[in-house]
Image (cartoon, rainbow, N blue to C red; front, side):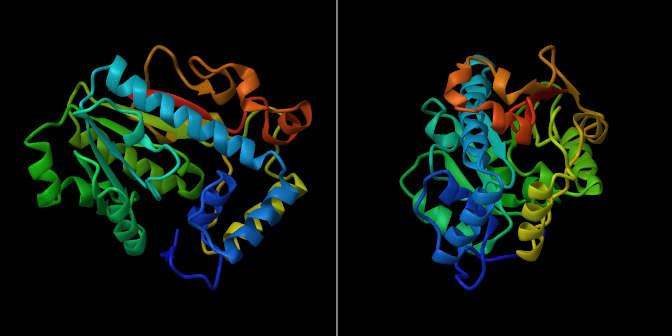
Length: 271
C-alpha cells in the first residue's frame, strides 16, 4: 500500500470506495465513479462487502460479550462509520483503532470525539509494533497484554511478507490468552484470480496505488503462523456463526464469481 489521502478528491481512494459501496456518505464523485466501475465488473461486490461488515459486527460481540475481552485493538481500521466495532461492544469496553492515513485519523477522531473509551491512532498495520509501543497506547493498556486483535477486510492488500511480519509481532507482544480475529480474503472454491472481471478490478486498485493480492485459504494459513485457529477453524462468511444465509442475498451467479465462501473466511486465532 502507498500513502493516499482520504481528502484528495482528484483520484479514487479504496477506503472511500468501500464506504460508498456500503451505502456511506464519506466519498467523492471520483470514488463513486470508480465504485460503479467495480460494481459493473463485479455486481456481487457490495453484497460481499456488506457480508464482511456483518461478520465484523458479529465478531465484536463474540470477542467482548462471549469471550470476555475488555480491550479490542483493530488494525487498518479505516473510517469508524457504518456500524464499526465500537457500535457493537458493551459499555466499558476499550477500543483502539488505527490507520496509516493522517487525514483519516483526524477525521475519525472527530467522529469519535464523544465516544468513551474509544481511541484512534496514526499507525501502519504493516508495522503493528509502532502502535503497540506508543506511550499513549501504553497508558491505555496499563500493562494489559491479554487483548483481542482484529484484522478485517484488509488482508488482500498486504504482501506475504507483511502478513508474516504482522503475525509474528502480534504473537510475540501479546499475552497467552490473547485472540486475533483474522479475515482471510481468500479465493474460495469456484472463484478464479484469472477471471477477466477480477483482473480488471485488480487493475483499478493498482492504478489507485492500492494493489491487492489474491491468495488461497491454504496460503493464508501458512502466513499467520505461529498463530493457530481455535476449534472452529476458518469459517466461510456464508456459514458464519448465526448468519441466516438469505441475509447475504447471494445468487448462484454471485457465488460463481465470488466463490462458495461468499468472499472470504474468518477465524479466531489463538496461541
